[in-house]
Amino acid sequence: MTYQLPATIASAHRRSQSFGLRANLRPDFDPLSLSALSALVEQNRMLYSHAVPAMETLYQQIANTHNSVLLTDARGVILHSLGDADFLEKANRVALTPGVNWSEESKGTNAIGTALAEQAPTTVHADQHYLTANHFLTCSAAPIVDHHGAVIGVLDVSGDRRSFHKHTMALVRMSALMIENHLFAATFENAITLHFHTRPEFIGTLMEGIASFTPDGRFLAANRNGLFQLGLSTPALQAHSFSSLFGMPVSKLYDHERSAAPGLLDLCMHNGVRVYVRAELRLKHGARRLDDAPTLPSPTVPKQPERANLQALNTGDARLAQAIAKVDRVLGQGVPILITGETGTGKEWLAQAIHRDSPRARGPFVALNCAAIPEALIESELFGYEEGAFTGARRKGAPGRIMQAHGGTLFLDEIGDMPLALQARLLRVLEERKVVPLGGAKPLAVDVELVCATNHDLRRRIADGLFREDLYYRLNGLVLKLPPLRERSDLDALVGKMLDGAHRQRRVADAVLHLFRRHAWPGNLRQLATLLRTASLMAGDEDEIGLHHLPDDFLDDLDASPLKPRPAAAPDTKLDDLELSAILRTLNAHGGNVSAAARALGVSRNTIYRKLSRTSQQSPAGRTPHP
Ligand SMILES: Nc1ncnc2c1ncn2[C@@H]1O[C@H](COP(=O)(O)OP(=O)(O)OP(=O)(O)O)[C@@H](O)[C@H]1O
Image (cartoon, rainbow, N blue to C red; front, top):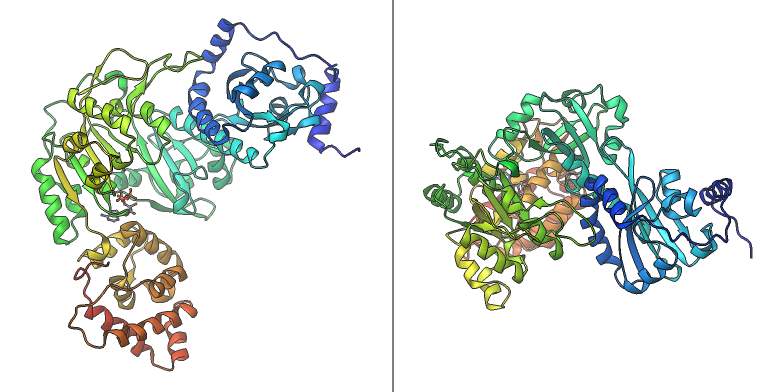
C-alpha cells in the first residue's frame, strides 16, 4: 500500500538524501566520550538543570509504556535520557542514547533532527523515519527556545511504534513550554517580571504571558505566550517600555506592589486588550541571594510601629480583628504561626501581611505550596541540592526554598499535604535551624520565620496517621482560624475594598448586596473577588454593578444552593424561600434583567427589590453558619 507522506516528512526525506545518507545505513555507535559529554552538559547547564525536573515529571506520566524522554542540545546531541529499562535497551541498539547526534545530517528524518530543521514540534512515526533501522520507533519532539526566541535544545519522547499515543505530542509541547518558562524566570535577576493573561484563572499556568522589564521599566524579553498576547515581535518590543505596553507608569506599579495586599492588576495593553497582571519584583536591593545567606538581617532594622498591612485586612469582622490582634503580640518573636481556614479565605494574603509588618519585611518572603508540586520534587525544592546530587551529570546545585527564605519568612501553604517522610526532615530543620541539601554533607545555618497554612483539620490527619504530632506542636505556636466569608460580618466593607483596587470607582446596587449576604460562598474571598472582577467588566461604562451584570452561573448557584438559614423566629420561612427561588430563577432566565423578570412574573420591579431585600434583612450576614 502506498500513502502520501506529510509535506514536512517529504521535505525532510529530500534533505536526508541531499546529505548523502542511505536508508540502510547502520546506526552510529560512536557516541561522545563520557568526559566530552560532561563538558557538553556543563555548556548547557541552564537548559539541563531546568529541563531535568520537567523530564522527570513527564516521565512519570508515561512510565511503563515502552517510552523514553530525551533532551538534546541545539545541534541534536542527546544530553540526557530517562526511560523504561526494556525500551532503553532497544533504544541502545539504534544509538538513541546520551552523547549521540540525532540531527538530520546524521540520522536523516527523525523527530529530533526534523524538529530542529523545521524549528517546530514534529512527530515522526515508524517508517516515516529515513533510516530503516529506526522504523520501530515513534517519536514526538518539540524545540525549546530561550528568551531571545533562539532554539537551545529539543525535548523528545521516543517509544516503540506500537506504543504510539496521540496525546504524547501535547505532553511534550507542554513540558517544553514549562522548561522555557522556568528558564525565563531564572534569566533576569534584577527585573520586574509580569505574569499576564486576559483571564485571571490562567495566571500561573502554562498559558500565561511572561514579560520582563528593567527596574526603570525598559522592555527586556517576553516568553512565547507573552509575545503572542502583546502581538509584537521581540525586535519591535525593544522600542517599548512597561508604560507604553501596559498604559501605567512604572512608579504606579511600585506603589501597587507596596500596598497592603497587592492583588492582580487590571490593565489595558497598547492594543486595547484588557489583561490581568501579577507583578513580581526581583530587585537587587530587595532580593537576597544565597551568596549573602550567612549574614542575618541587621538587628538595627527598626521595628515598624504600625501594622499597616495587617490593619488593611481588618475590614470590621470581629473574629478577624481578634486574629490580627493576636498576630500583633507575637510578631518578630520567632513564634511559628499556623493559619487554618477553608480554601480562599485569605490565608496567603494574611501570611504576606504578617511578613510585611514584621521586622523581617526587608528580607525575602518565600512561599511553597506543598500540594501543588509533585511529591518527588518537594524534597529538592525545599532543601535544595548540592552539585552532583543527581546521577548522570554534573548538575549544578541549587538552594532550596528554606535557604532562599533566610533572613525572611518561609510560607508553607497546604502543609497538611506534605508527605510524611519530609515532615521528619522539616522537623529536624526547625529544631536544629540547619539545612543539609540533597547530596550534601555540610549543614548550613538558616534563620527563617515560619508561617504555615492548611485547610485540613491537622488533628484529624494526626489521628489518621498522615501528619506527625511532633511537627504539629512545632508549627502551632499561634493558631489563627480565618472565618469563611458566609460567616463574616464585614461583607459590604470587603466588597468596597475589592472594588477600590479596580481602575474605575463603582458602586454595587443594594439588590446585589442583598444577594451576596444570602449566598453561602463556597469559594470564599477568591470567589467574591473573581465575581466582582467579572461584574465590573460587564458593567463597562456604568457606575453601578446591578443584578444584570452578575454572571449567569452565579445566579444559577444561588438558585441551586440552599441559602443561609434565617433565624428560627422568622415567619413564613418556607413560603419566602419558594418565592425567592422563583424570583432568582426568573432573573436568571432573563440574564439578571430586573425589568424583564418583573414583567414575566407580573409584578413591579420594586416588588422584586423589596422581596430580595426583605429576605436578606431577615438573615443578617454572620448570624448562622451555613451547614
Ligand atoms: N483581605 C482581602 N481583601 C481583598 N481580597 C482578598 C483578601 N484576602 C484574599 N483576597 C482575595 O482572595 C483570593 C484568595 O486569597 P488567598 O490566596 O490568600 O486564600 P487562601 O486561603 O490562601 O486560599 P487556598 O486555601 O486556596 O490556598 C486572593 O487572590 C484575593 O483575590
